Image (tube, rainbow over the protein chains, first blue to last red):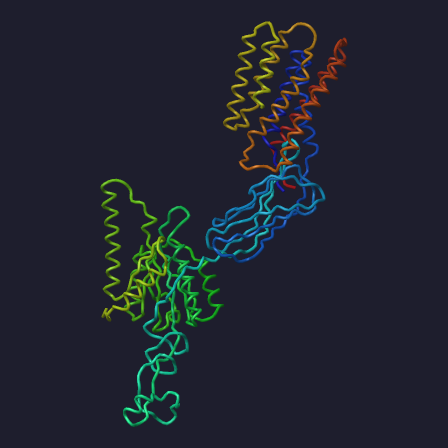
Length: 424
Length: 165
């Protein structure tokens, strides 16, 4: 522990010295009485000063939590030396707030006794945190000396983003070869009726279409569309974000990404993840609950890193973007590099959908004629970017904090229903 | 509370004295003003100067006073010490609430220290009053005072150093 003297010690010493000098010079015994307690307190404190031995442990009630959930932290003091006053401060990262309890707090430790300091935290933001760094400061009885120490008992805590409600999912235009929940264009074993054809040896009797057979006088059988899975790639644009206080466009983007990944994985699709920005992060498409955890864990490490380097799709590993995959891009459309990369994806024939995380709620236009014109030009420029995507046959749905993700997905679905093939 | 105690000492110095009352009041007033300023601004370095001012007013009052020692000296010393403790407590940069037990114990400590100052001071005055002091005793007193000051000075030097244990 690091020991330091408080300003009080110097002040008391000075007052005592001055009082005694004045008593000597003026021959006033009353001034000795005035100075005596200051001398005594300073001397006794200096003689008794020692570094206390404090054992402290931190316990988290769990390692994983959802955004907005409560979690309990227990700061346990072992049976060490006592301390008259101990200031305890648990360092909390941004995204965790104290819901119940006091942090920092001042308490008294009795020698040889255990002491528990419970805190209830609320996770206000997703992220991967390490909680348990404690700052301790002990004071003696008169607060003349203090001892400070930092105890590192950090433990990992992962706060996952909350899931957004998505009623229907976007259907990919092309499916893959494995069985899944999407009705494929190809004929095969399935439920959805596709066509009828003449019976051939090996066809099962249950597939015979008796009405067609009776009308034509020969055996005809039903054909079904195969039910296949799809490859979905969540493409997260992390070049830039619009931020206002604690909120930024990255937060809803991550929530949407986690929700969409969970929903697609639940229906046996292969889901991959690309975080494209100042740093590149990717996960190859795969299925199952483990993939969901992998994706969410990868998302937790996502952050906006300012970079002026030009990046295009060349840096993305080819296996990350399998052919005929549905690419769901979540972007605030703030950086030209992301826009160019997405248009490049479309030009390469990927089935691309853009969900724009609207930055308008995070931007406050400044007052003034020029500022107003600049703001309007910026918005027009954003409309123009949106137009470029639409001309390339890419649906762009604008998602605000006010509306639900389901609305944005429905908007894209409607666009795709009425869209025609575009040549780019 | 600290200001009230210091104010009481200042008022006592003015009311109980009969010579140069305006000067005593002015010195005490300056001391109180400096203390109030230090408390509001939370300046620990300024705070002792306020106490020096109030103490100086009391010293001037004592110096101008005729007769025996001030019988209320121990009470003044107790109030002065309690005021110092409370002042330094109030300028601590702590914007969170302490445990109730900690606050109660600290208040009890300040009160008992003040009480002890008053009792011990009263006893000391009782023992020393009416005694004739020879030159040898006076020399011993000066030596003791110098020794005390040396100890205080060494403590003050130590207070500037920080040690890792």
